[in-house]
Length: 230
Image (tube, rainbow, N blue to C red; front, side, top):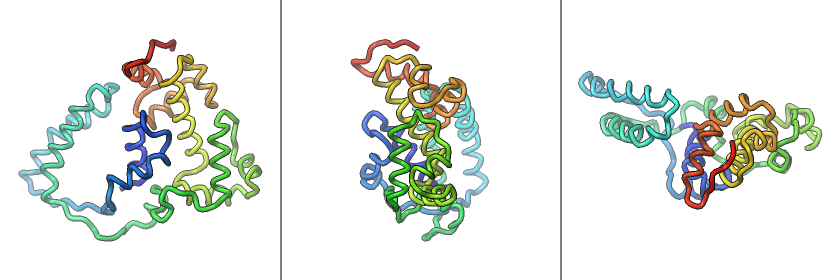
């Protein structure tokens, strides 16, 4: 399983209680065990046919813009699917796709901790100053590395490029502004470094599953929050 995907799901599911993905470390370690690398399914025709309508509905519900309102039905459908496939699954005991895991997942031995001081410094700069117009050259100069060294070390430590990490940071900080302040959405986007509302909305939805407006409306359902401007 893609480790970054798991971290993202845990973080956004519990965003009211976790300040960032690194905050999720202990929570994940408490509830998760080592994940299987490859799951094999050997379904017979009868059971495969049982899944067809459920998978079709799942596909439909996750493609439209009503994901949050359909969440309970999506979860129910997944449990139905899981109930059918679990008796037929087998898993490999060891990691088999090294190259894929190195590219897409956080290295297991990192344990969500950066390995080098330079990587920590780069991440700190991005988190402290997300509104800056960062380029790889500027960030590399700030941390006294070449661009290639920076990218290699950062990906090894954090499981993503500095650019992807900055996007994650901006999404988190924008979510905090939308959730905890009445700052207009466009102004909040500028505060975290985005000046194109359309581009910012697209990136925010890719990571959180909601547009900034949908996220703010959802946050208003929390007791104690007042209506805010858009």
